[in-house]
Amino acid sequence: MKLRLVAAMAAAALLSACGLNSVPTAEEAAKAKWADVQAAYQRRADLIPNLVNTVKGAAGSESKILTDVMSARAKATSIQVSADQLTDPNRVAQFQLAQGQLGSSLGRLLATVEAYPQLQSQQSFQMLLREVAGTENRINVRVEAYNQAVQSYNTTIRTFPDAIGAKIFYGAKPMTPFEAKAGADVAPTVDFGNNS
Image (tube, rainbow, N blue to C red; front, side, top):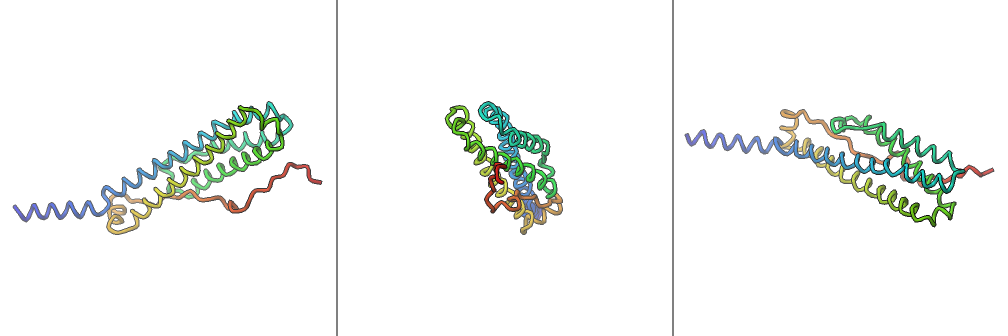
């Protein structure tokens, strides 16, 4: 009887040490952080029409930039990555590319706006600029939190003893971190198209 109790306790200890709980816990944490990333991008997508309408009202001549922003927004919101697709680097890369194009278009729009002092003085525009800047900061914070959760999950499924449970019980695959787009270390060039 004592031998069975000792064997049961040893089996429970071995199972608890092989990732039975830590693997799904780390995976769910990473998926929750991904949902936060998506929510931050959705906030940005929701703000853009307000920003564009405000700029249209005060600077109608920059329609190409506004059209580019709306086109990039449409593309960015059409590409979604579910939590189940986080192990597909190509799908995550498509999402990142679309979001990067939208960020780039927004940067051109904001640079153009600096040329219009009347926009700067409008209270609603100032509020929208603060919202966009705050949203971009939120996105960065959410991406960092997601990457930390992915690192934790990937480390959990690759290290002993959790790697045993990760492979045997869950067939766990590494998740894809959110990476900076190529050339992100180079400052963007602002061109208003009036160079000869």
